[in-house]
Length: 292
Ligand SMILES: NC(=O)c1ccc[n+]([C@@H]2O[C@H](COP(=O)([O-])OP(=O)(O)OC[C@H]3O[C@@H](n4cnc5c(N)ncnc54)[C@H](OP(=O)(O)O)[C@@H]3O)[C@@H](O)[C@H]2O)c1
Image 1 (cartoon, rainbow, N blue to C red):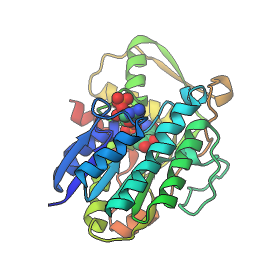
Image 2 (spheres, helix red, strand yellow; image 1 turned 90 degrees about the horizontal axis):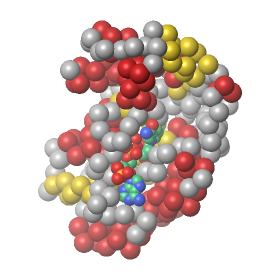
Image 3 (tube, helix red, strand yellow; image 1 turned 180 degrees about the vertical axis):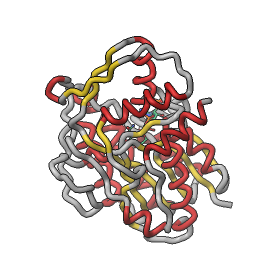
């Protein structure tokens, strides 16, 4: 029976994975209470003790702005912990599935980014995630890295959808950035595609793959917010918001610089798995349906 070790089992994507991965074999979910990722020896010990066939890393230091001041911690979680996982993965002959981000790009393109495009992260979060990817490539010869973007879901500590709903209940006017373009991705869809990846490649050795996976379509944070309020209103949410105003990034200064354009091209994963992701608006609809 396939043994799957899941790191980050209480995050947005990690919680969804606890449901999907358990369909594929014996799942050993690990959260922060069981293991703090800054304890590298503990990461090694748990992998050696369990000797899984597959390791899925759904952990990350995801606080993009805070990472600018907690640089060391961001690198410990996003760069060094994946390196340790990769080293142990190689020792026991398992396969490491790791999640990365669209923020490895600088956003200067105006075409969806391919897996082969040059990376150039703008902030500590993106830089530390890119170093995590590189550490995996250098330290194991059996891995799949999945870059995704603008993740929201039902679990974990918070996300853009939950923030908008909260603000929509509190304020009549909400300002949202219109000049950052990307694609929202439903955490449940990421988990479903990770299952498909495991079904396709789980038994193969020496797999070295990088995939871009997001929902389909393109939007700004402003478009995303408007869609969230429309869906919420249709479902009878008691919202105060009357006006959503588009603003520029320059009018909303943040500690971390973000790419102006970070749409990922998902053609490669669709071709290899013979399956397309849903459009982001359909997935957002599904998210609200599940809430109701
Ligand atoms: N969120 C996004 O918009 C986004 C966009 C692109 C890519 N991604 C990538 O997608 C993946 C999943 O992200 P997500 O949105 O599911 O993130 P998330 O909800 O923040 O989950 C990350 C998980 O990592 C755990 N973690 C962080 N530091 C830890 C530590 N020191 N020890 C043990 N566990 C620790 C967290 O534990 P606690 O719950 O205890 O803090 C949490 O369960 C990540 O690789 C992320 O970089 C996310």
